[in-house]
Amino acid sequence: MYIVRRDILSTFHPADGKLLRRDRLKDGPGDYCASPVAGDGKIYLISLDNVASAPRSGVDWTVPATNDLGARVSASPAISGAATFTRTRGTLYCSRK
Image (tube, rainbow, N blue to C red; front, side):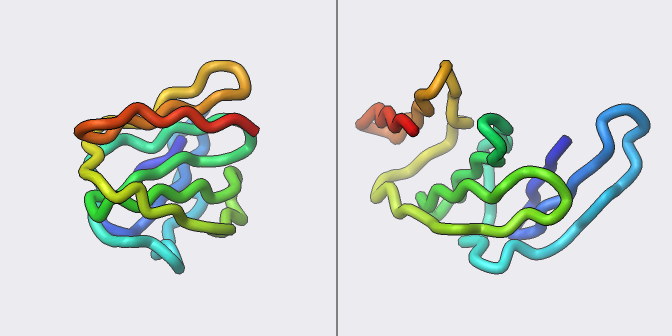
């Protein structure tokens, strides 16, 4: 389980809720409103600064890259199969692996 607040990501064991890791996202771009979504071995995050990142899941997560979406995002990304959907105020993006 993952929780993000400001630029701090926390990882918890799903069975007992034990904190496994809490750390500042090295390339974390500020505050977050949307909930993190886990899938495909990644944790999908979108900041209030419109920056999307997908750290690798688990306890040893790192942020391989970030992407500025250029528009306000308040919704969590959605995952369907190999596609990830991200909605900004005016655009729906679909990315596939």
